[in-house]
Image 1 (tube, helix red, strand yellow):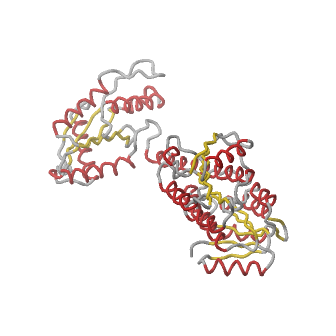
Image 2 (tube, one colour):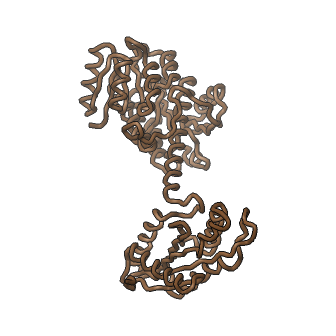
Image 3 (cartoon, one colour):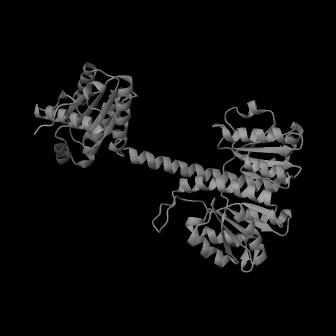
Length: 466
């Protein structure tokens, strides 16, 4: 099955007709005859899309949207309303209530299926970004209320028409209702359109004379990395269900089925920009969460979770290229004394300063990670044993060359570090991450045992001490 669709209609024959259409298109169908029943079904089954009659025995499509908004797991399920009245006022009222689409009854199966496909394409992305999981403790990212359009910043909106006269006419009419940066272009002005910064919204006219070119351009815009995240709204002019369906299948986020109507266009722009903003916030949250999982919050260095896969990649690259690389484990000497004498806040500041000094000695391609309390790991690709030994000495000197002046400490603090290093590569016979790390750790132990505040270059293949 492609997905689950919940049909809501108080008239049983309408539900049956829709079920036949949708089942033939390989959708799983749920049915409800009221807002109350639909809410219960949605909460228990989490449909991918809801198809509702505009009027219901105990409410209307707006009431359905409001009921869904109170259930976190289904608050963003797209809703298509089917209306017996195909007038602008009905559409505007429904779109203002957060309904994603309004289609007239009897519904055109071609445009219905295209709109369903369009909305469902965005559904997996939305689910993945929000990381919703079943159960009361599933991770749910913050969401804007579906029925309320918050104040948004001005956007860059490009109006692409068959001729510049129409584009400027649309711009003039739209400028009376929005304060956005509006630009007028012809369909063939791709070079100008692609100049940075690219628009936030692209409105494309599907004129009878240029629909083919406009549809190809629409697909092109959705495929390019620079414009992939732009909101694209298609406007068949004049209205044409077949062209509208084609535009949705080519990747348009929205379509004005009845041609250019400025108030409806404003609503659809606002709604699509809200979705775009929410998706961007969710991506940022996911990106920040992934970064937090890989970084040490105190020093800003990578942590062990990142360091070991990085070392694995370096080892793999070295095997293919025949190059050598260095792995180091470093540990601040007598760090517990610093915490005991000056307190943990000062100890934390020492760790931050130590990380800064060590990082300053390394290249961009090198890795410095905090893998324990006062323990660091260094991976340096493409170096010989002599170069690694010299680098370890420089790192040691970076720490002990000058005392640490820390806020909260009455005196400068003398800090030293011990470093164990090994050379990796196909010549060593040791290519596993754990083996290299263990060898570097043994070399660190040698440096500690020799008196600390020094480095030790060990052998990757040396057996562990008994």
